[in-house]
Length: 139
Length: 302
Length: 122
Ligand SMILES: Nc1ncnc2c1ncn2[C@@H]1O[C@H](COP(=O)(O)OP(=O)(O)OP(=O)(O)O)[C@@H](O)[C@H]1O
Ligand SMILES: [Mg+2]
Image 1 (cartoon, protein in one colour):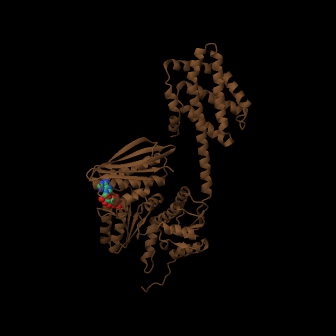
Image 2: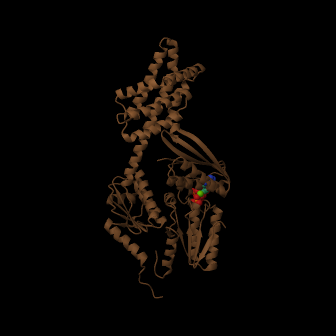
Image 3: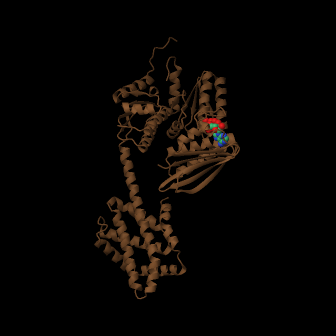
């Protein structure tokens, strides 16, 4: 996010169980629709949230997904922040590669989320936790 | 959401001049004055509008009726300090008069005229006491400015919305999804495809596939001069999404340039169903459909 | 079991009714595998019309169903993917490669009826 981005409202979903993954993405879809995102884009956002929330449950046990409306001049958007205090990621660059997984999965989650959203940022520290910030602007 | 924008634009002014007790007392005195002289001031305003040749697209009666509503909303906004009602009215007014060709300068013009008419009447009332006059105008001006901005911004936003809608309608007309025969759709892409239009085309096509229960889709890009990597990538995603819906996509009219763009972004053209021209594409599509209906093939005995 | 499985002749039909958790999906996978074995089914149709998100987990699980049932002699097809979901999957990079997808249940049944005849494919 550049300068001049205004944050309007935020809602937070605690993510700890599988049901929370569903809840988080449903909430994300609802907020996106509320903001006027098309059904198509709301679906992209919900899918991204689903991935990030699952990573939290899978690798960090618990964390949270924060959804915020953002504004930049006349542009409006939504930012998804998935945050945990789990083990962190050893090699973030590799984690962003298609097919890289430490759990024998597809390893598509993070790179997929980057493709779904307009902006993507990941910050992770081993032993401290991981924060993924991904946003989409209304076109 | 529009409201939020407006508040951002107008609040700093109001905040810079906190309405003190005496100012608010003055404002209510002012409001009483404007209510008392409603008939006369409104009349004066309408005359000034006509003289300035504003709102020429409207009849005298119409101008009078709108002037009455604006006047009352205006006084109410002065009284309450809230702009919501006026905002809603301004948008509503714009909606009605934009189709009749009323221009932005006319709307700004009439609001400024009203501001002027009212200021003059305040001047006439208080001109004997300059101190009071000064304070009355100090209270009136920022409020009047906010109101003028609100109405003008409301009008401009409404106009922008109308223009956007028209553009949208034109776009949709120019991107038809055609059903040539049962279960076969053709999407002729023509002209410059920007990312926005590409998204729209995809949406139309995918919904068209469901609505028409299409099994085969021919996307003809003969009429597309150039495609940047972004749009080319979008085309590939569309083909893939159509497959997920259960339709086979045939791409026709692929120019060497676009083919090269596709290869450059890593598309395996061998995996994409491409046919030289639209005619050939339709033939291939019918073959696919025919094959589905009558699965004749050299079947091993059994 | 969150997803009802219907048996129609040699075909099993699982119609997902609402959003599923990961465990629901795994249960569906196991139930389908078990029933394919029990009934010697030749085809499996998973109707995902009600899903408004298909992420990497659900896609992988459905792909697993397709691969595992094939080993037991049944073909799995996915029907009813919504247009928006299909586009999101494509953008994500989830392709369901090797798994036939059809518009809806009717198409799915038609397709299975076609492939049941020897020598034809799709
Ligand atoms: N929140 C997290 N905390 C710790 N490690 C993480 C976190 N998110 C991702 N990772 C690490 O990054 C790797 C890549 O994540 P990604 O989501 O791309 O793939 P995956 O979860 O392994 O597979 P898929 O998402 O396709 O099922 C993971 O295998 C894991 O090692
Ligand atoms: Mg993952």
